[in-house]
Length: 249
Image (tube, rainbow, N blue to C red; front, top):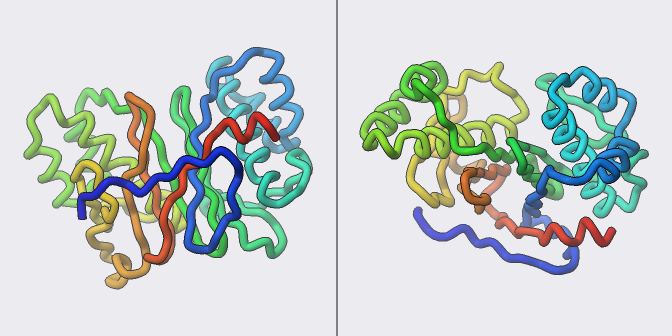
């Protein structure tokens, strides 16, 4: 299926229905005063992680990404952003304690971040700046399936960086939705490389029912980036949330 992703922009935060996945796009550049405010929202563990980052702009983007995630989740839970407590799965995927039923995932790359939020369904999201990999074929042979490698090599040379990144974000989004991290060999499942594909999971060696149990799609991304979204079930659609809502909160 190669149809346009059903994205809807909203100017106020809608109710998060069970058949929706809300998608937020966040810019990670801001002034120093705002960075200090964002830093005040982080937990001791997040602050410690930030302090270990030696490159100033990378540290700043980590702080803004994590604080923005907290502020977004606070809108849905009615909690104080700084008071939210995260628990972590075996592969490091965060989730909220308690029984809220809220699932979420964060990804960021360079100056942009994406957050996915859903009710009662696992989600994974990934955004990446279009890769400038000097030897995309060698990297692909480590993590791509045979069909994905063949598809990449069939592209003209000038298209391979984009094709590599499109494939990578789709695989990342699916792995993040599963919550396994790269302890799960990425070559064991296959994704479509077609531009704009809204049903991009092709097969999974570990789950023959994967294409009936999960949906994986390319989603809108700023220029110079690729993004993908995966979630459990087939009965959902994405809604793009206007990021200005966050500034009004």
